[in-house]
Length: 306
Ligand code: AMP
Image (cartoon, rainbow, N blue to C red; front, side, top):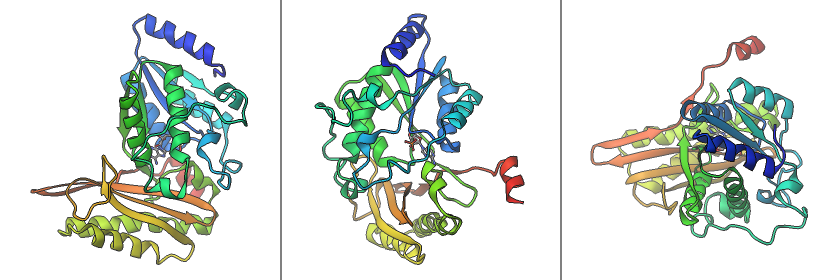
């Protein structure tokens, strides 16, 4: 594990000096199969794989769950080693933000993609994300960086930021990974009570109902939105924050389903805020829905469930 910026830079400069390529996976830790799938994609394509593990305070609002965000350094280091990760970069907060908790004077803001969806209820969140990812890209240097489609708005923001700032980083979006019952994997799922965990499956069922009407021929974005929202509001433990149908690249709201469409939802289950989405490619031939991949339960998981 490396904690210092200068040490990581020197190490990766030497790696690239030998002609090796670098795959980079930025994370906030508490690894699950979604994180592991990104590590595997990076491992398959690169000589050296770097995973960063940093719970970025800049992307949490004052009333959000920074203090409750799950942490498991030992488990994460073991999981990264098992995936063949070469370097885990886990900087202390002062290493990333000297003078913390005084905020940095320089931040990165991606206008236009950050006002809607999660941006409306989490003001400043995407500035925090863009700032930390820009810093991490600057520290890691030329590389290919792997992000999950689970965080679709974050992926759009990071892509745009890297392009606008001419950063020497290729961005790869990886499929969403789900639990066997459809719940999108998230570090925050660890904070759900058993009843909330059960209730949270309504999010996937809502998206699935939306997928069904689109496959059945529906092309009205408002109707699709209502189908998804109606399912989510049937569950008393779940408070829907938004269900939106937008263009996948601009994140602008759509009236009619056409091209690459993102159906994104956010909901509070107890105190835990969860997000989920599906993408739909609509053309004259029909619609193809991408709800991500459901992973088979592991042998250990089956044993624990018995
Ligand atoms: P986080 O640690 O939650 O900040 O996530 C680190 C990376 O893992 C981000 O690129 C996320 O989009 C990705 N990720 C988180 N959950 C999933 C998931 N269920 N499937 C695929 N990627 C994910």
